[in-house]
Length: 420
Image (tube, rainbow, N blue to C red; front, top):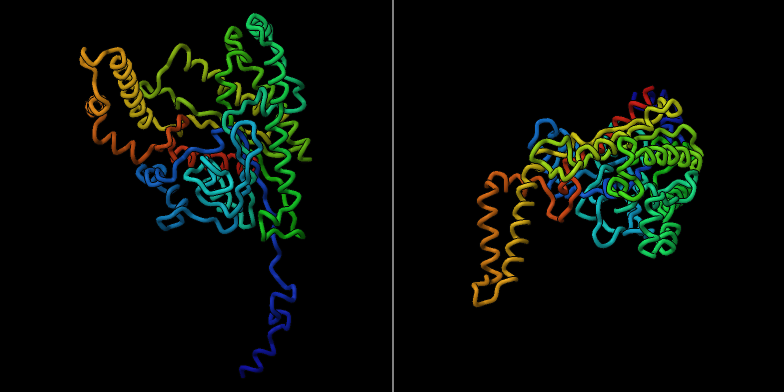
């Protein structure tokens, strides 16, 4: 009976996979993530557990840990992450996506202690697509769109009248102009060069790539802005509400040039709108001058390209300010007061002589610790240790919670474009 039933089974079902009878492979979906320190990512892995303290985000932690206690290693998501210091091309980290592809202090080719948006972005994409996925991340801290990422179609960097007058009076106009010329577009070209390098040999990064199934350029995420926001020379405050209009124009051209250089005229594009200062909750940041108004202007300029008819249905802006947690911001402001107290105490102490009662270094530390204990409650200290990174990061307090939420939001935005 057993022999007869086996004979009823079609022969091709009994053949091993090596005979070429396999389930049809799906195309490799490729996503490009680019920008400056926002995209590099300063979310310390040590703060992952804090994500689970909030009912609104506890599911993110479960997804990032894959049901265990350690960061998940994705089954079907690979990453090539190019990162360097300043204007350096840098080094590439390659492997299956997991935590550690954020900021890397010493060697960009080796796993670090941080995540950026890429981790939760890749996890969310893996949940939505049952085929292979590749992330190509190119990000460098401290790089501007006006100079470093300047797209070719924008032409050379041009000094405005105020800059010309300033540098002429200082006698360094030629020197500064030469520096701008050298830096202009460098990181844009690094980005395109690296993407093309990876696409030219996909098996190097993604060993399971099936050339017959091919690949699809499925989306681009841009998360950058700080260096342009603080550049008072390029973006003159005297322009008022139009101060950052040039940034919008540059970003529009970046989208056009990326699509042209990657031969993908409708490449879905997500603009991550910078979330520094969060939602301006009182007590969470120091609103020096018109910092709040200026940030609002800049965010509007960042999001503006998404509303152009030219980009309708394939460019979307994502606000990240809601992910910059107010509670950590409030504690951070208290810690800034502690730092200021320490600086003032040391300065005052240095002006004294031994005869007039100068303090020893241990006494100074004791005074600072006493002031901190008065200002920051034990509960706040515990929250800070759990939720904020210890690396001295300014951006988003080194909190993995911010980067996880941003990554998920970017993925959902691209998925909404796919659905249109």
